[in-house]
Image (cartoon, rainbow, N blue to C red; front, side, top):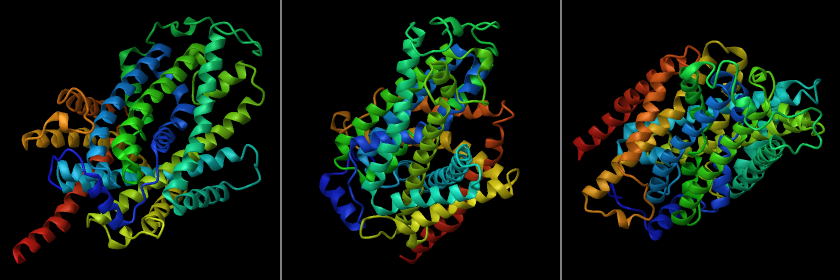
Length: 478
């Protein structure tokens, strides 16, 4: 396909997917819940207390608003690309076609490692939480059980994966909606079950140190962390190749996801910030447990323990799906062993799925055996990956649209187009760059640069040494 063409025709899409055996079985509701499932996780349920403690109540709300704005810009760029190239592997393909194959190669491996590390972390966290109810059962047993469940859901069919993720995500979305509705009502004075008085609306937004207790720097550092909290929204692009009617369902899913993330994240943070006293916000207890307990909800801690376990499994479900599709896409492009590109009769890249699960289990083992060496490196690269992938998406969109217009295309011919071109992709790219620069000033996050940048450089070097030489050799023979 020529660079910059507005979209793949339906015939071309069906021809590609008929050849490869992928199944277009997911609908818009599956895409939305996959993105929601990848985003809403421990970052909201557990780490939001730290966010408030760092930036202050009002600062945390501002940080999440900035994060939501960046997510909107990235998703707008992703929407145009996903409609133009509705293939499995998504932004790896976008980068390869719009920027260069080496960038696509680096993007794919960066994102694969990000989710492989996340798999290990989520299995461990879920196993630890299960000990609340089953303290006599070792954590590793729960880890293997959860790994087997997620592997089975991904191995049956893409529709089974999408359906399971829909219900996984629905549980935690219901918890967020419950917090916003019940907590918001309590702040307005309606809290019949509460055992103690609720603060008045807006009372907690002002701390004894002012609106921003740690200054603007605290808000900036928190904003960087918020970017990571929103990671997973790009999973819609990964699933684009297995979506029915992508020209309709992808833009619909993009818009719905952005609106819901804005409401859920900013709404939840606003209720938590207005309810939990600034001095009590921390990582010691989930703010959701604190709010529901103050509301007088029976068994609040047990309910939230279940919801958080579901959130972790939901994110792991999405991560395993993403890992397998990235490896399949690399093999399809000739940049990974051919065996990883083979599909079952149901259209599942089983070899890629198995390797991805092994990567997650390797991460799990390293978190136990070498937490301060190997696992630290993996976690650092994974943290770096989110912003790196977003930069790849926005840059791919910029070069894609520019080539399309240069080749005589018109904006009106695009089935879906991101607004405010070229301002939007440039602004999103620069904000991502600023966030990476800002990481260097935060000792707790600077490790991401120390390992992330060399990893990307190594990917480029490996690609040019292995694949560029092969291509040169083939051209010489011809």
